[in-house]
Image (cartoon, rainbow, N blue to C red; front, side, top):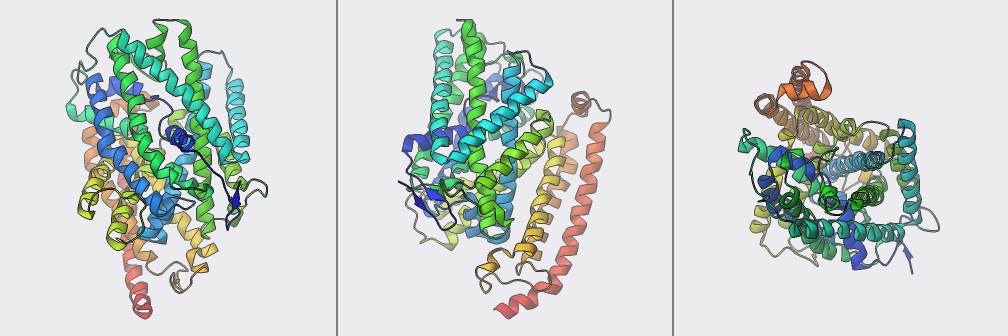
Length: 535
């Protein structure tokens, strides 16, 4: 039985196990990507980071998502949480940045599925694109059918992936030959560089616990999401740690592990039963399918919720009459993937990291603010810590997130800064055009009659650009010390690329600083009188 919500969505009953598997797909769908951590950071440090990061990164996010998801079980999830804690402007930034990152992430999964498939079947570039396009079309159809069908597909694919990695762990431990923790870091590489390499990948593979929250408005019992989140954290830890430890202990050769043609988890089982190697490639393809399908569901709800608040084109809230699915949002995201999947993986991912990391920082900050501002807000699940302890729990992941800005590479740094600017630009355009929350309550969300933005938005934009300026200044001094210019010349085939990118950092930082000062001066002229008048 289903029920219809105010904006045309329909609520469906969903089992706890289905939600667990959907969260598993959103966060992991296997240990893919960890292969690249091993040679970059060293096998010992990789295993230690896989054990430590859940406690200082993914577990805090899982707990925050569980608490806020239980208190505010609304469609849009984390976007609503940040909006409630920090206001309309910052809520939009979190929703926009994370949704944009999901658009990019989702294309990456299709590209990886095509690459895995092409590794066992000889395909021309056109045939590989046709394969990727067919994947997008099929899972778009599944999503158009509704969240229940997405859940069924996610459950089936998750069981296959979990079984495959369980087999890797069992085979690996059964054929233990060497200490998987040796060497701890690559010879000749500093511990700091190794930690940076591990952090950049580890944060990515342990992210996604907030993504299920965007679909809370379509569940008859949304409180099942925080419960499932708490169960999924140790499940994902096991899927990452045990196969990696078993694989390193059995086949070793840590220098040659790689997700792009090197040793991988498939070799652990294929060395024992050669025929299983092909089977594991198929599992890898299915894992990318599961990621694409669930993120298509999650990401499409991001712009849906923003549009419902009059901060994006209104056609994005259209739902199908029979199933209550925001089909326009789903089709828009699928169409974006059809275009982006024609580009190489390296081109797509370069703007992704800073977007989702910045959204994560806002989620943690909003969670702390809500603990202070609304201590009596009903929280069916509440992290068993007092406010001081809760804030202390959120500090390490915020610091980790901030550090990731600088250790992902200067190409990611420049691409990320430019991508972040899309947030305030989009907000300005949509707020002026559609009115935002002022359309619902013009008194509570008063507009500045001159800028047509909310009162105080000029100051908020100055604050955001000021923070980005500080990030740029830190990058100007840190990146030349941390990055290897020769690596970028070899990776991209462009001499002096690092110097060109550093010049871009200087110019972007200078422009951000000028814009910050300009907005502060503008806010000083426009905002105080309006704020006093409201008071």
